[in-house]
Amino acid sequence: MNELVGYLVSGVALGSSFALIGSGFVVVHRVTRVVNFAQGSLAVLGGMLSASLLGGRLPHGVGELVAVVVCGAVGLLMGILAVGRRGTPPLISLIVTLGISLLASAAIIWLWGQDPVSPPGLSGSMTILGASVERQRLLVLVATLLTFAALALVFSRSYLGKALTASASNPFAARMVGIDVRRMGLVAFALAGVLGGLAGVLVAPTNALSFSSDLPLALSGFAAAVFGGLTSPLRTLVGGLCLGVAGQLTAGYLNGSYQTEVALLLMLVIMIARSKSFVAEEAK
Amino acid sequence: MSRLLNWKTLLVVAGSVAACVAPLVMADLTFFMRTVLAAIVVTGLSMLMGYAGQASLGQGAFVAAGALTVAIGTTRLELPPLVALLLAPLVAAAFAALVGIPILRLQGHYLAFGTLALLLMVQAAMSAFDVLGGAFGISGIPAFGVAGTAFSGQLPYAYLALVCLGLVLTLTHRVVHSRFGRGVRALAGSETAAESAGVPVGRSKVAVFALSGAYAGLAGALSAFFTPYVSPDSFPAVESFTYVIMAVVGGLGTVWGGVIGAVVISVLLQVLNSVSSQPGLPPTAGPILQYATYGAVLIATLLFLPRGILPSASAALGAGRRRLGAGAGG
Image (tube, rainbow over all chains, first blue to last red; front, side, top):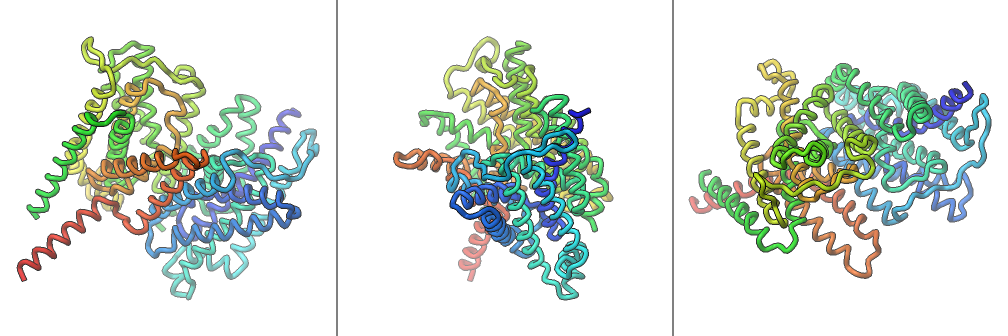
């Protein structure tokens, strides 16, 4: 029983990082219908930057903040390449972002080498419901919940959020009322950069990141986002938590090395089961 | 137009002669084999992406299926090498069809991620199950041979691969220009329109997917005979990305685009390898150059030459000829 609670708690903590990366996919796809393959690279970049900045004696908080802001700028650059040209079809934009993620790998190896890097985070662990959880993982969970609350508020309450949603649901009508759809796409990419960077900054202290972490990060985030049909932030959060818990349960009761595969299999099953509704969404 | 056609025939003949002579003058054929095998895989992928409009980021999964068929067939089941080679594309095609039936209901980026997930799961299964080689892989694959004879040296493999590439290109040409091929091109434009015109959309997509899987399986089988060792690390994800890059660079939706993309990117990689192994450069220069070139070439092609080398070149050639003809006439 105690074991089970432990897996559940650590699963929720792990899953919240999936959800945070997934939120980057959601923000970009919601507005531009593009899947940003380089979302994992943004997280790696965030983790690496914060490690260097904190190592360079920037105080905690400032170092992380600068890393996240730089990631936002990098996200904007990605957006300019991927959707800056008018009329690029989404699938071609996906392959452009694949190219960007390869370029990012080159830059990361150049600047930080091939070995995994881990910035300092919160140390120690706490006991919740009899299960011991690292404090950094709890920080990830809290930050994720706050981020999703903020996203929900932005999308439903602010003018910018409504303009972003409008560009997604009907680009033509959005242009008619004076929304610059292309600029909204770039805003979405910058926001995704911030979210990706935040995920990297938070995850890196417990899971050291290297240039090759981008693929597993991107896939787990995408898997979470698939729960929400790549458009719903709330269901992405739920999806991420489910995947994290399922992964930890598999690791605990079956075999730790199958954790990723279980997540991937779940993602495939959900994608296929919901393929009809995805097609309907694409057609809209 | 007929002059243009002659030019094309001339180029194809010249390319084929060069490909047949090259193995005789090259000292080490590893690079040559890698290029020809990549060309076989990319021809299938280019057909899938260009004609059927479906992207696969995990073509390596089917290369692995073909290589595993040969590895397990020859070492455990003691099949004759020829039988294993013929079986490999069939197994890969069957595997592609089996996973294609559910996975091809996905579209666009879902399919791209789905195929990538498939590749990662194949890798995981290969290292988890001892039947598929386990963590150590399968070694000791015998040399290829027919009826008691066995290949020695690299040269026969190079020609065997060339013959296979020739077969694959001929088959692709026939398929693309058949009734079935026209149906497939129609569904890439609009599935609904194709469906209403009587194209069996689901079945056609699975068939093209299976055919591209068969090509990949054939390439995997040849590579297993050439390098007699198969392990989960033989099929990294970045290799599957390379196939996509080659397909895009060469030109989607052309029969020869895959070959051109494979040759251009392979030569580029070879040049980069020799540059990065110069003394005085750090050991990370290799991967940095490789990733940077992949990314830059892919992005530059998509943004500035979106149709790829072959269609753009033949369009430019056609325009040039027309201008020449107009100049001569006026």
